[in-house]
Image 1 (cartoon, rainbow, N blue to C red):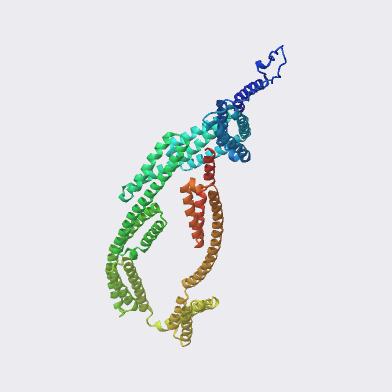
Image 2: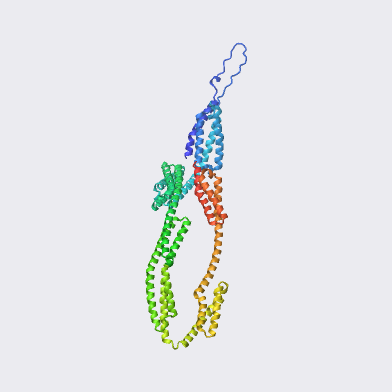
Length: 624
């Protein structure tokens, strides 16, 4: 492996040095091999043998520098592989030894004015041990690298998926294609077991995909802003300029091509996205307001011709559409609001047109009703019945129609002319019957009145029985009292043979307790049941929302705790601030029992400090 290959030169150097030292330590100087000559004459004072000075082992400064550089390189490589996290205990052990030896190295090699190879010699073994410790750590880490590769690949896959979700292949092809090339290169490195290179390439691919996603979102916003003409509003030019500047800075950084610059480019694109979003939001708001003015103007034109009365369904439809537009405006859905305002204006114009068309129809109907009423009077006058109740009613309805026409209430005017025709028909029937049965009308009429009264009373009794069964008095006391009084009066009138009155009174009962009224009562009671059920469901949904908010806040709190533990405030100040603001908003909303908003704000925290973000932070830390 490459770590062993790196270590072989060091072993050779160490072997040579040790061999040299061993030779020097074991040799006897040549001068000491032959003893000095002894004088033959006279006694000699004993002479001391000179001490043999053994040369102490020494080490070259360059050798120590090489070992120290090798130790530092190995440490950096261990950090690159993220072994400070993966094998933290062994890393700390090696690092502790490294720091101790580094201090000794500084004192013995870097600081002294005069290098002392003998004094520094023990440092060689210390450095050799540090190098060995790092070699062993990296050797063990190399077995873990494939897992790191898998992790980085998963991160790149996730970023690629997110980029595809926002249509990056079409909206930001250059960044996306670069990400694909980096990804493919990482795959090749992985197959060749070049794990560190693979990790770097996957990281670069992930950064490129993230950049493409941000660029795609920016490009979509720019496209929509241009398509809808939002950039024409002077008050939002500042945001547009800021966005364009951020995009230019992002493009310059992107062209540099390294991972840090790409990450910085992505951050700038996200800032540009916020500015473009502001342009989009304000522009769509202004355009929606313009459409609202148009709808209000159309409404005023419709009101001028009483379209609310003459075309109530069409006018109400326009009001409903306008209300939907207003709701969308309140919810800041300005694009939807714009469309709804335009539809509302069209609907108001349709109601106006219908009302104007009805003006002509009303004039024709009134003229025709006048002619018919005059002819009916002529027919009734032959029997002296020209002032019969039907013709009187018909005349009243004709007057009402004329008054309503002047008030521009064309629909009601036409309805009144129809009533004129109905009463004319009743008058004609009445006159005809009078001509045929006048002589025997009294008895027959009496029998008819009696039968009618009986039928009416029978029907009224059925309705009163219903009123008793449903306890109508409890929630409709007036209707019950009116019907009850009329029922009593009808029965009394029937007993004294005032059948017509009895019938009328009984019909009052039937009218008061009509089928429609009964349906209304039952519907109202059913509505009360529904309201009660809805209230109960609302309470349940609130409890569900609270539970969801609790879960979301718990997740957000754990992520904020992670952020505090990992000093995110310092390294990612904007993300930390955004998450903190969202966290506080979640708490405030929760305190106000707005659990849906609380959940949304808590989820914002979780999105900001997402698993991907945490992985990004960890990856950034590992790459240091």
